[in-house]
Amino acid sequence: MSASDVLTLTPAGLYCPAGDFFVDPVRPVERALITHGHSDHARAGHGAVMATPETLAIMATRYGEDFTGTRQSAELGVIQTVGGVEVSFHPAGHVLGSAQISIIQAGFRVVVSGDYKRASDPTCLPFEPLRCHAFITEATFGLPVFRHPDAAGEVVRLLASQSLFPERTHIVGAYALGKAQRVMALLRQAGDDRPIHIHGALERLTDLYRSLGIDLGDVRRVVPAERKSLAGQIVLCPPGAIKDVWAQKFPDPMTVAASGWMRVRARARQSGVELPLIISDHADWDELCATVIETGCSELWVTHGEADALVYWATARGLDAQPLHMIGYGDEADDEPIDPPAAA
Image (cartoon, rainbow, N blue to C red; front, side):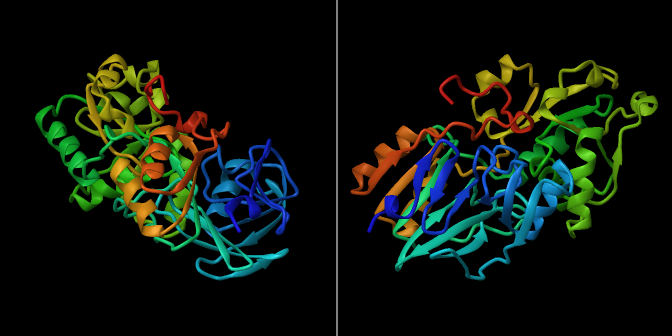
């Protein structure tokens, strides 16, 4: 048996015929299993959705309670039978509620990782390596140039800049789901207990994180009339807002971006980012390679990102590897990287 006996690639995405479901489909389908809440993986309009309780809550927050016909909660590690296969969800370490999906058919195990990372994140459960016959991975940062530093150290750099320039407001661009809350939690871990100010676009998901038990401390929505009084404060906003007129209303704003793409310093400069923070919610090159080895897989499919480099690496080690070049992932408007490399 091979991975293609369990999953097939269709225009809607990866489909499991024996279970009659799709994984992270890019168009409405009858039954979808969803790895996590980013909108390029979790879309509205499916007949039925199975996901972790946190991902279901994120989808309801983003799309409304009627985002699907029916919903089924997937508790982590619990095996459920769907059609003719066994499925289970396991932590992916990407954002709150993110999960890998294990599919077992006739004893052959395929793991669909979704997006994932191996670095520590106080806002979600750590990635759980799973032994499998076939592993389906992303490769957003699948080039050796992408090696992410410790995110906690990047936040220390942010605090050092804040101390050095107390007259300036530090405007931090961070994706609304996951990245913004991770930066807040890292600030708390670094001992910063001052209020954190946020753009209104971050409020609903930040409130959801807090309601699901993630302690982010004193977080306040920016009131337009109070912007001039926020000199020396840290303000989080969506990446696209750091260069908006909105950001220019703060005292001497310093442009900061938290993204794995900030590893490409020339791109950061071209984007007008004064303080690039390399904080990624995706696995870097070393993590991708280590994860493939840990799974013990003999087959590797790469859904999106820098697939060719990872496939080359895997093939050289004897794996049956192929890029899927799937369209629709990694292009969520809200999670759009700030000026990514042209090849990405």
